[in-house]
Length: 391
Ligand code: 0T9
Image (cartoon, rainbow, N blue to C red; front, top):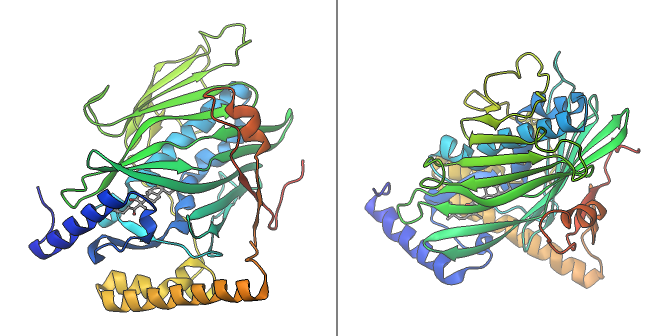
């Protein structure tokens, strides 16, 4: 069952034992070279946009119910990219580069006949612990996603358990009925397969998509051996607001696997009108290709942009020159340490460029109480860059 060569095996075992006894911020541990990814965590928010048609067409929903279905569909369709794409591309889950404070990532999914341009802005807003803020916006449809992402990790039963801190807010601007917002919570992860040297991610527990008008999707995640026996299984139930006149007829249940297909197991009397190309017998079918984000070449990027900043480290990892990778990584870390020292000496602090931290997200406070009693204390990073929407 081992996928590793004997020499890798011993360094891997040492690393896993270190994780097991450490149980804190994994980003600070030194992992064996073969598990390193050349991609920084600041690139991960791009997974939200890799089904651009599903994202922009949320605004085409004819009413709250239709739009809630579309938000759920888009969300489920992003999970494959978010949680299995490293396995597909690199053979296993890998340790991403740990972003530096102020690291930036920009990209877009260009306009086509069927959709407007979607842009992504990402900024690393904290280094220890790592926190990434992001904002994705499609001006033509008025669909905007804002959020931030951090992780709390622990070790249990041979797996790394990752509780995601942070949440996302999807806003529909410019609907005839006014602004409409959805609060999206994030699932819990388990990194399995550690002892065999081939880590992969499984999702567990529940996550929620709460529309401020009362429509609520409750998504339950199970792995192999639970309700379907298949890995990457989920069941989503979308329910209408409590005062809806016909709640049962308007409850939707979708079941399947988030990396392949899912279908309605209880369709409401209502079925969303789907655009050509979006309609299949499935609720989601993500077996086909997704669309990766377009990013400017490194030669046109600024010094703080992720791929330029990590260029040499990534080159070292990609080519197997781990001495180069580690030398270049040390350079970046030393520069960072020096900057922090200089700030202390000057009595200044690092200023974020595209986001502003607020201690309490008003939407989170208002909506989180509606479904799972989470204490309303979550902060938020509000986008302050160009192209902001006033409504
Ligand atoms: C937000 C996502 C997140 C980031 C990653 C836990 C993890 C860092 C955070 C949660 C995205 O929207 C979705 C997907 C994968 C998550 C990563 C998987 C992972 O293993 C890493 C952690 C920090 C490690 O690198 C652990 C070390 C190693 C033993 C695993 C290969």
